[in-house]
Every structure is written in C-alpha cells, then in structure tokens.
Amino acid sequence: MNRKVKNHFSGKTIWITGASSGIGKSLAHEFSKMNTQLILSGRNQRSLEKIKDTCLHNGSSVLTVPFDLSDRNSIVNSAEIVLEKYGSVDLLINNGGISQRSFVQNTRLDVDQKIMSVNYFGNIALTKALLPSMLAQGRGHIAVTTSIAGKFGFPMRSAYSASKHALYGFYDTLRVELADQNVTVTMICPGRIQTNISKHALNEKGEEHGEMDDGQKNGMPSDEAARKIIGALKRKKREVVVGGKELLMLPIKRFMPWLFYHLVRKIKHT
Image (cartoon, rainbow, N blue to C red; front, side, top):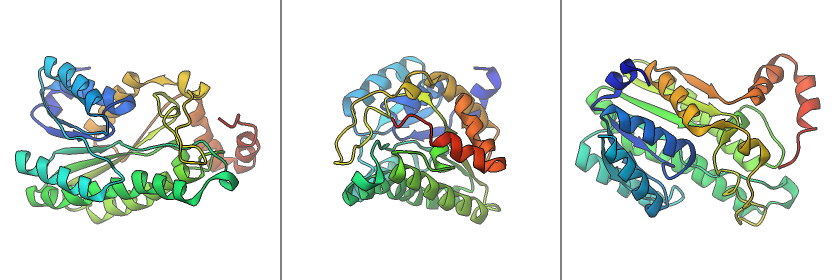
C-alpha cells in the first residue's frame, strides 16, 4: 500500500459491516495499517475480536459493535453507540449481506424476504441512521458492496440479485440528492472473490448452503480485492468493479445481450 493512501485515511473514522470475514475482514486489515479509527461490525463477536487484535497490532484503534442486519432495533442502537463515541463517521462501508443458492420455484417466500431484509433494508437502515451526522459535519463517504449479480440475473440467485439491484436504485438516487452536500457514494461491485459467501448462502428452506463454490474458491484473493477497493475509495470513484474474467459478462450483457443470455444459460448452477 502506498504512502498516499495511508495519508489519505489517517485519522479517519471508518465503519465496516460484514467485517468478520471475506472482503470486510480484508478491508479491516488494510485500513488498520493506516492509523485509522475502525468500527467493526458483524454477527460473530468472537471473529470480530480476533480481527480486532490484529488491527490493534497494526496501530489503529478498534471498536467492535456486533449486530444483526435483519434486526432494525439492533441497527439503530449500534448507530447510537458509534455516534455517541465518535460524533460522526467519515467512511461507512456497508459490506454485510447474505447470498443464495436455490431456484425460484423451490424457494419459500420467507427466504426471499430474509435476504431482502438483510441485504437491502438493513443496509439502508444503517445509512439513514448515520446520514444526518454526515450532513451536519458537512462531509461523509458511503460505500456499498453490491455484486455483478446486481447488474444482471444469475441462476439460483433470484432474491440475492434482486436485493443487489435494489441497492443500485437506492444509492444512485442518494448520490444525486447529495451531489451538492459533500457526501460521496461509492458502489463496490465484486465478481468472484475468495470468501465464504457461498458457504453461508441460504438454500430454498433458509438453511445454510454449506459448500464452497468453485467460482469463489478460484476467485480473486480478498486482500487483493480490498486493496483495489481502497484505491477507488481514496479517489472517491462512483463505482469500483473487482474480480476476474467473469467481469467480461458486464460488457457482453450491455453490448451483446443475445450472447450474454446464451452464456448465462450454460453456467454451472452452483
């Protein structure tokens, strides 16, 4: 990590949700090398404490605030704890979420609702809880982890894809509304990254899938993805796309939709 990035984030208060594993964990490790004030959230308190120890060793201060994105009261209470301690947050990284591995016709409606509750409503609830403080201080940065599945439909990801599409609609609107108020919105769009997201994905009954997808296993290392994301956040980009050859599906979908639909039908359904 170069010196300019370290200087840019030095002294900043950064809140990362979904910090107990994957991209969130890697982002925490990278930011902890930059003299930051980190707030780490997720459901797994034990994992958060382990990550906290590493981050403290790297020289940053760390506060762990565990909560469940499907629990609105938990989100509000967590925001109150953070704002009482720090007054405001310079950078919120809404990274927490849950994936899916089930076909539409087999998936119970309550599973769709749970995925939307966590990935969309929990996400925007935290943003709304912090936004007034950002506006009051006259600056802020909100980053949101979406997915290339938020750009197009994908087999066995119906609710997951829908929740990620919804995030684009919400935050593209928010970006326009805040254009003159010095609050930046960055969409983080990962492809296949080496994380446990497929293991924790929900099946048609709402149970954990429990298996690592080949795509995840062979994807971009999460620490490499984190460094690319941090570089984009420093530059205040509207969007950063990270991943491997699967990202080619984005221009194919845009410019050759007939080829996209031909290819996506042949993708292994896992």
